[in-house]
Image (cartoon, rainbow, N blue to C red):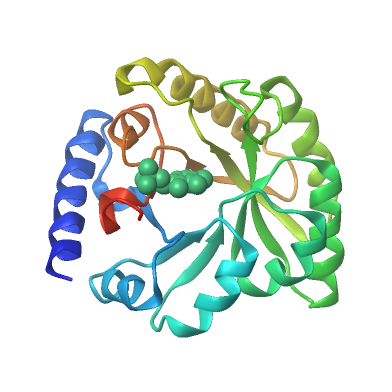
Length: 229
Ligand SMILES: *Cc1c(COP(=O)(O)O)cnc(C)c1O
């Protein structure tokens, strides 16, 4: 588990540099440790070394892990969420980062309402217009957020995106910049029941660029836990 400690230290150093480049402090950048395929003992090692937010892609995998990791942590759903899994997701997660349709948001609203809770969500944008990726289209986002903002048990807290993979992470900079523009635009509208706090973008390969372009929430798997088996 020594390696996890080292990885986290390296990660924090890189965050510090990237944050400085965008005139921010490293404390403004939230790290989501992405735990897909990672066993609870290994996740626990990262939590014991200061990780506070864990990201899972699948409801079923989260169900097996959430109770086994101890500490002052919250779990975020970062993968595609099927409507029939929402009833479990609202119990397991403190944030759902992958909301990409009104129908999904409405189901979250219904299920969160039954628990008497308000679910924090991010709206996922398909920034690269990739057919293989989930997320709502860029142009649809303002309307979608307006609609979702009418739901009493859902609160929009920001945007999430998975940038297209490019060998040279410099090439994803324009996508991150577009996300930042959209984020700023929606934030300036000051919609009721919308609190634009988080811009979730950047993974192991490209998070430094994402931070330079305004990300304040990065989702790191490999960079903390090493290559997935
Ligand atoms: C797997 C995953 C990540 C982390 O990817 P790494 O390249 O291992 O850092 C981030 N976000 C989402 C949505 C993922 O599925």
